[in-house]
Amino acid sequence: MSSDFSAEEYTRYSRNAMLPEVGWEGQARWRAAKVAVVGAGGIGSAALYYLAAAGVGEISIIDGDVVELSNLQRQILHNLHDLGRRKVESAWETLTALNPNCRLNLHDTRLDAANIRDILKENDLVLDASDNFETRLVVADCCWREKILLVSAAVGGFQGLLLVQDPAPGHPCYRCLLPQPPSETKPEGILGAVAGVMGCLQALEALKLLLGRKSDLTHQMLAYDGLQCRFRHHKREKRPDCPLCGKGK
Image (cartoon, rainbow, N blue to C red; front, side, top):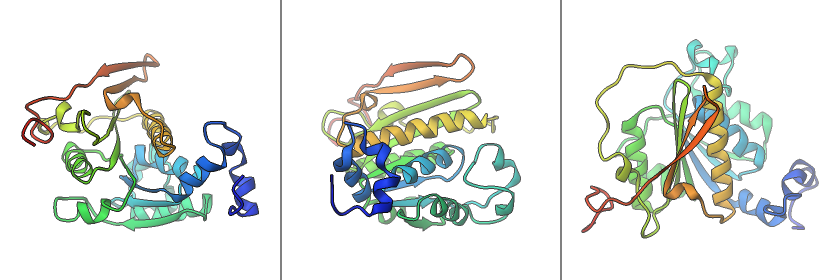
C-alpha cells in the first residue's frame, strides 16, 4: 500500500484498490496521469464524471460552448442553474464537488490547427468526445503526431462507436478509417442514455490504458446498437495509402 495517499484518499479509492488489476500502484498511476477530454457534452459528461471519480490527477476540459436547455437530456454535468454558463465552468463546479483532489484545467475554446498542439501536447492520453468530424480529425491528427494515446467515441441516434488510436509503429491511425470528413449531414437525434453508455466505455478504456494494459480497440472499432442492446467489433487495418500514416509518412 502506498504511504503517500491521505486518509481521505484511502477511503475514497478503497474499492478501486481492492481490484487486483488496480491496487494502490494503479491508483497512483491514475493520480499521476494527465488526461484531456475534448467536449463536455453528452459523451464527455459521463467520461469526465468517471475519470474524476476514479481519481485521475489532472484533467483538462476543452469546450467552447455554453449550456443550453436542449443539452440537458444528455449532458449530465450541467443542470437548469447552468443555463447560459460556459460549459467548462459548469463542468469544473460539478467535478470539483465530486472529487476536489482532481486538478482541472479549463480551455474555453474550440480546437483548431492553431491552438491544438499547445493544449494537448503535455497529456498522457486524450479522450475525444466532440460532436463533429472536423474536430475529431484534427484531434486524431495531433495525437498521432505528438504520439499521444487517443480514445475516440461518437454517437448518433441509438448507435455508438468507440476506438483507440495508438501511435506506436504498426497501428492504424484514425484517417486509415476516415481519410476525409464526410459530406455535411443534418443534425440527428441522440438518446441521452446512449451517449452515457459510450462515455462510460470511453472512460473505462482510458483507465485501462493508463494502467499500461493493451487495448483490442487499437485494431478494431466497437459499434454499439442501443435498440438491440448489441455490441459488434469491426476490424481496422493500417492503409498503405493513408494520408497521415501511410508509406512515405
